[in-house]
Image 1 (cartoon, rainbow, N blue to C red):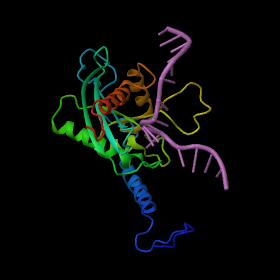
Image 2 (image 1 turned 30 degrees about the vertical axis):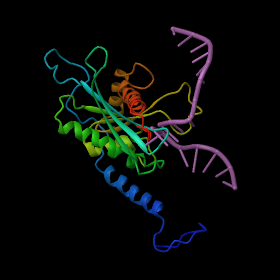
Image 3 (image 1 turned 45 degrees about the horizontal axis):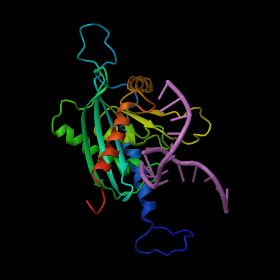
Image 4 (image 1 turned 90 degrees about the vertical axis):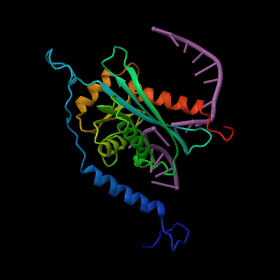
Length: 232
DNA sequence: GCGACAG
DNA sequence: ATCTTGTCGC
């Protein structure tokens, strides 16, 4: 260990924990990034080219989000929803919740280390139960390659779950120059930007695409109903 | 020194 | 992410 700069505090036995964490996190991101695929890599189609191959159409699009308790900000509710985009009203055919107490803090640029474990658990749980609605592509509330090191939450989750993912950002640096509140779509894993944008457009009834919008709405509703106070 | 900084 | 009411409009 080297000297601790002018922090005004002497630590000899247990050095800069957060600094070291950041270093390990950066290594982990760079490591996972080697497995990142940013071009189309899936078997389904976005539209039927002929009348025969209808089974190959994209049908199940998932969305994930996490909401936090207003009273205890470490208590979070992760939510996974799946919509059937072949139904005429984007029906929600699956949803699941995971209430947890997070210990990892939110650090800009490292959102995945805080949220990915929760979202991965929801995906693994669904796969374990052999649900027929397991998503063919997943929209994530957070950025993909639109990230300081080109590896945001959507990429992180996509690589670990080996699933095509799309990053849906609602805020980005320099949001003062754009016109009307835009959303920021970026490649997560196993698909191209063109494909990502096409899928997002197919699921947009409002500003935010339905998969992540429904996940957001339902996770907040879950926290509201299951009051996360000490009175419950 | 000051401002920025996904959720 | 969350703290926060009403309000104008389709």
